[in-house]
Amino acid sequence: MTLSLQTAADLLLHAGLLKETIIDGTWQLNPPAEPIIWFQKLAYDSRKAESDTLFFCKGLHFDVAYLHQAIAQGVHWYVAETPYDVSANALIVTDIRKALAVLSMAFYDYPQNQLTLIAFTGTKGKTTAAYFAKGILDETTQQKTALFSTMNTTLNGVDYFKSALTTPESLELYEMMAQAVANGMTHLIMEVSSQAYKTQRVYGLTFDVGIFLNISPDHISPIEHPTFDDYFYCKRQLLLNSETLILNRESDYFDLLQALADQQEVPVFTYGSQAANADYRYIPSADDSLSFTVKSLHDPLHVAGDYQIQLAGDFNKGNALAALLATACAGAERLAAQTGLAKVTIPGRMEQLALPNGATVYVDYAHNYLSLVSLLQFARSEHPNGRLLVVIGSTGSKAVSRRQDFGKALSEYADFAILTTDDPDIEDPAEITAQIQAAITSSIEVVTLLDRTKAIQYALNQATANDTVILAGKGADPYQKINGVDVPYAGDLNIAKEWVNLQS
Image 1: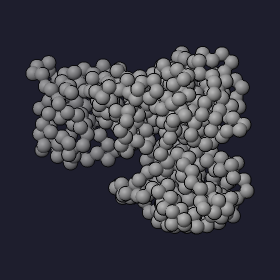
Image 2 (image 1 turned 90 degrees about the vertical axis):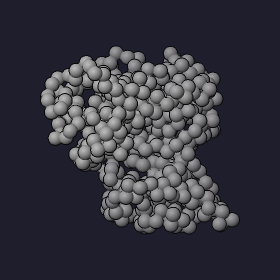
Image 3 (image 1 turned 60 degrees about the vertical axis):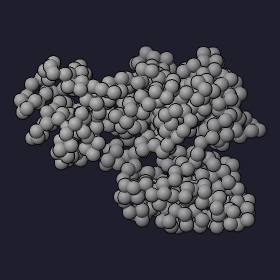
Image 4 (image 1 turned 135 degrees about the vertical axis):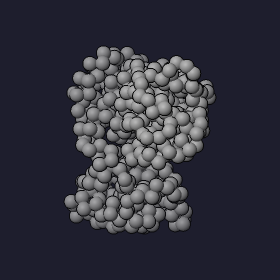
């Protein structure tokens, strides 16, 4: 992979991003055509910079010391929004993040053009829907489908590794896309977060199919989105950057989403359960909680029929239908969808465990108000005769609004809340749990145990026959993020299973 200085400047100028070029302290518009200067590497981490690197001065708290370090390691050219008094030459741009995206896709030779791209966004259900879509496409492409999800990433369709971000930074995004292409992948399924648009990680990227699952307040914090309006605005940018759209007819603010989609003049398919005017509806089976029927008046995608999944809850049937429609738009046929959906399991999603005394445990990644409420409503409907015990914490250093949201959800549905630690990062987990408790307005019993293992064990000890224990937030995550470090963690399901084994 290479990129010439002259090509980089031309691309930035064409994108309206280039302000000026600085060579040996002299300001000019473009670099000279000769000599041709080649970059063998792009980097925004000074520790990775070398003599043939084009270095990007990126980051909310960028320190010029990083640039000095890069220059000391041989860097001759950098990209920044402002000139620095250093010995290196520079491309000065109006938006460093957009510049990074534009040059990254060029450096890796536009790998998106060799992939069918499917993108999911929404407040809840992205990971589940993405896994469902991969399950379907695996039947169609013989496992030539890559996946970038909140939990895991696969670049060869088979082997997975833990994801650092829901949507990778643009440089890593295109690097991984290029690797997927090199591995023979034909399709890529992505979760696209609000931060991906907020920070321009997917700037200039068009998706073949974009799916908008739902929207509710989340990720509201000083370092993410200052308001719901900003969060929602970033989410709906997917509608402006997709060739075909799938919309949840029952989502909040659907009329705005529909109006925005109509302006794009692209194919739009809607889905839902109760909405009679949806293009496609899922009808849960009366005698099998894992089966459903898809109905449509016209069925332009030829997917009407009977389906089965392995995840309980009607909300997961909605996720399955969204994936079904998205993959149909990407060429999958009904038989592949029926076979693929029936096989999909998702680590940490609606995993169920029976306790020796008859109580039930659900382990789920539910980590915002909408997903938690959906989970608690399901548990209430499935187990109406017992108490609902919820083990939950909230992440640190982001999504501060979730703490009040969790307090509200617990007030509405729980009988007993066990507050604990969940990726506190640099924050004090005791302060996080105190904020959750302060938002609880009902008279439910509340216990705080910051050691998550002990909190789970305590909840299981408290459960009696007919009770339901919800272990929410961590799913299958084998780490706790503490002070910026991923510290190994046994995992909610493993802790619960070990407790059950000790009771046997």
